[in-house]
Image (cartoon, rainbow, N blue to C red; front, side, top):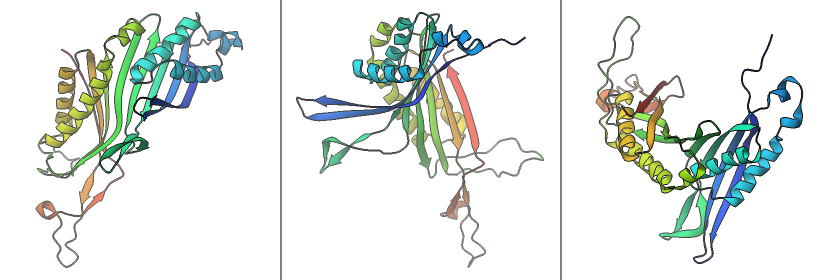
Length: 296
């Protein structure tokens, strides 16, 4: 016999753009998001008996994403995700949980002659601000915030030595190397009982995002890194210190390699060790280092 062990469904890759117009100053602000919404609940018969009476159409879910963006602020994205998820529980008694993912794409205001332009922006990289929300009748509102795709590089100030050496080892030890990665940082908030609890002190979310981003950049730049592992742990510790309502911080950092090129075969050029200036960036394979740090 077969049984349905788990199920969720909804709409993915819903692109949303919202503009805020300040009539007093003539300044406009913009937010562009990609939203995913997946529902769970008493929907088994739609799978097992072809019973569509329990299905909220994914097109209706898409429409709701737009409508809730009109009715509520989309900043911070944690609040928008909470409102969106709660709507489905309030509207449909047979839906038990809504899983929301919001990806906020980066638009930065253009400066013209040293002054911020009132309505013009540019895309300054692939970095995104992400939020995952699970809104359920049983557990309340669970939120995870993230920075993803923040590309960083330092040309010195990183080392790696003292690691295990055995018959499988070819990697040489180094006391000075290039360190580059694409930052994927996450932080899990304490569980909120209601949307009202999310709204109270809502500034916490922007403050934590700015703190996490600044800590990541400052630690990456200033730490005399003995390893990616140790550097990322220091980042986690400081974020937990700055954001009192965050319970767990995690990082996933690919180690993007830049290899020295031996050019001694051409006119005796010195291009290794302290003489290295020209490198070959590698697309793969790469190291991948992950950790999660919780409060003790």
